[in-house]
Amino acid sequence: MRKLLPFLASPVLLLGPTVALLVLTIISAAARPGVCGPSVSNVPASLTATTADGVSMRLDRTQLSHAATIARVGAATDGIGRDGVIVALMAALTESRLRMLANTGAYPDSANYPNDGNGSDHDSLGLLQMRPAAGWGSVAELMDPEYQAKAFFGGPDGPNHGSPRGLLDVPGWDSLPKGVAAQSVEVSAYPDRYAAYEPVAETILDALTTPGSAAHATEPGTNLPTAENAVRQPAAGTEVVFPLPSRSWTRTSGFGYRFHPVYGTRLLHAGVDYAAPAGTAVLAAADGVVREVSWNPRSGNLLVLDHQLDDGPVSTAYAHLLDGSLLVSDGDPVTAGQQLASVGATGAATGPHLHFETHPQGFYNPEEPEAWLRTHAAGQLKKAAPAACVTGDPS
Image 1 (cartoon, rainbow, N blue to C red):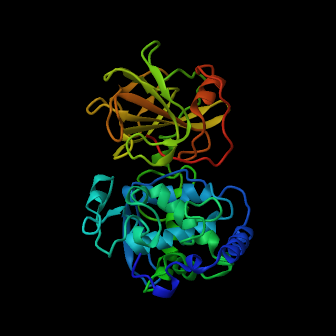
Image 2: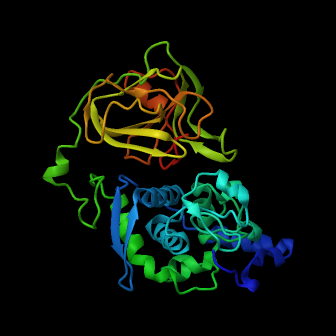
Image 3: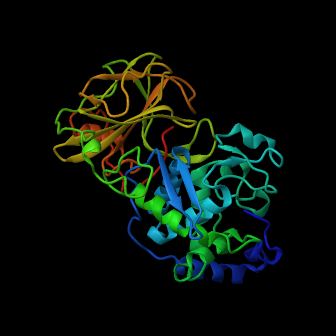
């Protein structure tokens, strides 16, 4: 976030308790209730888009993964919908080019958190260049992309409760031009920059939410089904197996919000953790095809499979895999019970374990995996699946 206009930095702090309560009541009423927003079904390896003033820009998988985080948080936030996600993407494109930036000049410890490089804009941090000094959050919080997205969207359930104000705290934000809405949250000294990124944000969201899009798409439109990517679709199967050998594991953490053991912030644990000795075989839960083999600072070595079961498509994810243990590659077919890799402790992990996720509505829409395993005759526990629109990252 660029230099704040002094008279707009913290308006609610100037109000008395009664007026502040009235303002927050109006803000809460202004938030539009609604169903889930856009559902992320694909994160391309890269994407090229053009700004409103004709500048072509290429975004890589890391940038698009951050965009997917913003879209997932927006989908889980009442009143945001597609338009709100577009506004947030415009802000992140303008402020950081969708990169998670540390700022070692202002906060040397910011380099200790997963980041995509070092910024130097005053004391701003992260995707949306939020400032601890302006009250957006601590360094640890602002180095978490999911926290920044929640803070940007704001509203009654946002982490800042209206000060600084997020998008839902701006009365009538959805009737404003999207660039103006972004500026209403960012409060930049350069308010006209955001509008140029609206077509780029639209292109990104279209690519993220197009079912069946190709993981290697680089241009708008190339994510449509083709003969080349049709062979990557999984064949229908019925058998589901547990992702680790019998009696090799101990359940250590279930699905739901918790304080992350490495980052120390409250995040959604979007799967279930099974501790097992390093090198224990990790098994495919069902017949399918490898959707993605990747690495990121939180999940470490990550493998995602797509399956087609009798009750519909589902993706499964396997995180923290041992370095050098992967036995499959992008696009490979797999069978239920086939060894994929081995248990490790890569990424943000405190010891060797398998973090396992299920996404019945498309990747980046996780549901409680033990309920899914139980339903398909491979699970152990009894917890019911949570409500739709829960989102999170593997850890």
